[in-house]
Structure formats: structure tokens, C-alpha cells
Amino acid sequence: IGFAWVIGWRIARQKESKESRFRSERLEMSGAYINGMLLAAVSLGIAVSAIWRFFHPSEIKSGIMLGVAGVGLAANLVSLFLLGNLQKRNLNIRGAYQHVLGDAATSVGVVGAALFIHWTGNTMIDPIVGIVVACFVSWRAWKLIRDARRALAASRAREVQEEQEFREAQEFERIQELVSQLARRVGRRRAKR
Image 1 (tube, rainbow, N blue to C red):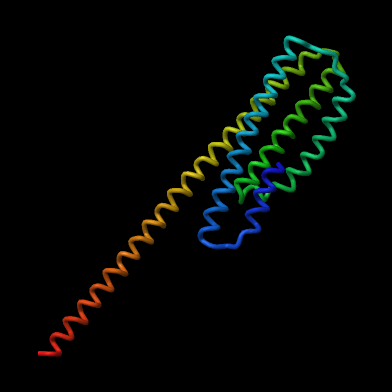
Image 2 (cartoon, rainbow, N blue to C red):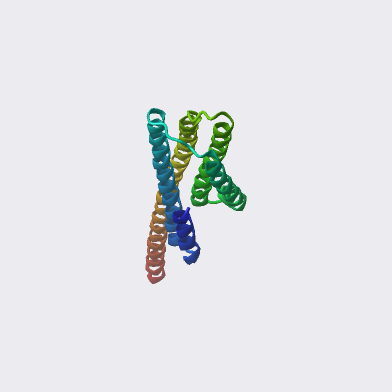
């Protein structure tokens, strides 16, 4: 999330020009791509940890688990509310939103697992919830990475198109100048006759 805010701050400080717009768009999309990759790494870590707990179960203090997850869920819900509208307009903020959404899903899963463990004493739900959360986070990461790659490709295509149009406009101006010079010469020659 901090990475997304740094990118956003950098974009906001830039003066608006054609070059800075392309640079800030690329920076925004690259930030979103990196956020997606970080989410993918987090989901892998969650999955590995969950698989480890399948084979090496340990004692779980459900009260502490529930308290920490409850506080985390509350913080994530506030963050989701604050980022909700912003993430629709900015791919990098969408990356931060995906991080928080993944954290919120994790918190919901942990709250549910803590309650289940508290009521039943069965700790096998913990790694199961971990696998489910890892799948959810990796799915969100994939969507963010895909969107960032598409946006980067579209941005590059748009930049190439604008460069081509600029070159064509320059060529047209050169042709117009040559035609004007030729017309002046022809006009001078006719005037001399």
C-alpha cells in the first residue's frame, strides 16, 4: 500500500505536460503491476504456510486470533471505504485497493476460523481457510497484473500513434513550405516575363 501512495504522490507533484502525462501513466501502471506481483507473492506465502500447517498442526489460541483478526478487519474496512471511489479512476490506487481487499478477505477468513476453533476445538480449519484466502488473493493479483499489462500496452500504442501523427504533420508542413516556395518562384518568373 505504501508503494501505491509513493507512486501517487510522485504523479501528483509532476507538472502537467504531454511527456509528464505519459510518464505518470507509465509510472501508475508500473506501480499497479508491481502491486499485483507483490499480491501474487503474498498469496504464494499464504498457500505455503497453510500447506505447512496441514502437516504440522500447532496449538491455536482462538481468543487472540479472533481479537487480532477483528482489529485487522476493522482497519481494512475503513481503508476499503476510503479507497473505494479512488480505485475506479487510478490503476495504481486499484492495486492498493486490491491489497486491502485481500487483507480484508484474510481477516474475514481468520475471524471465521477463530470462531470455528473456539467452538469446536478443531484446528484443521486454519490451513483450509489459508488455502481459500491464498486462492482469492492470487485471483485478485492476476486480475491486477492483467489489467496493468493491458494498460501499459495500450499506453505504448497510443504513444506510438501520436508520434506517427506528429511526424506526418511535420512532413505535411514541409510539403506545404515547398509548395509555397515553388509558387513564389513561379510567380516571380511570370512577373519577370
